Image (tube, rainbow, N blue to C red):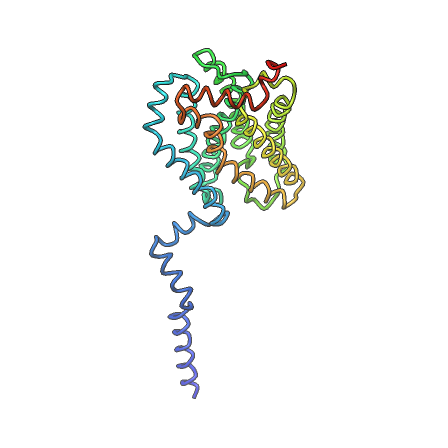
Length: 312
């Protein structure tokens, strides 16, 4: 009898080892093995989840495809227009879009041990590239018109390069010098210094956008480009940065809602900012001929009330 019990126990153990998974689990494991042992599975939905990755990757990839399909026409228009500002901006837009797509596709690095430094470097250059485009456009707006030529190019990108250079230096110092994880949000402990730095960063951007927003609504609006598209851009960026500032302030005080809200604003920024920038600043240049473009600008200025004084 004792030998029979031992034999049954051995059979039961063998059965457990041979059939540890249900049919659904077995098919999932087989699928993971079929795509490379789960490597690509983790690449897509580990760390922040699959929807987070898809909301980042799909809009950025579609925008890059759009730029690629329009490249031949755009390059021809650039050479015919010979605007230093537009040519330089278009080149920077391509570089930053490629960087942003790489950043969106490698979200799993943020939660992967041993990839923290690589993720921080990638995040630093991606966010700095996007900030360069932001600051360049703001510097251009504050010049008051569609300035062109070498002098305007030097002035615009000189200001932007200096500001972004300081930003890169400070973020690099805090990240790699002081060990503050500016670009890693999955830590369980709260870094008050980190969120304090992001509060300052967002406060500066919100202040600049808020200033331009107020100028557009004041009697000094004639000093800014008379295009509703620019006003809409400033309005969107003012409220987005204000929301991000609020989220960082909440996160600095340990509120979980602040972390969630900051993640939402980050996804919106990386997924939608570059298309917004293109629509605001470059789309009309590439899609309209020169005479029609002048008529469009005149109509927009007239609708905005810039010629009301001529009728008084």
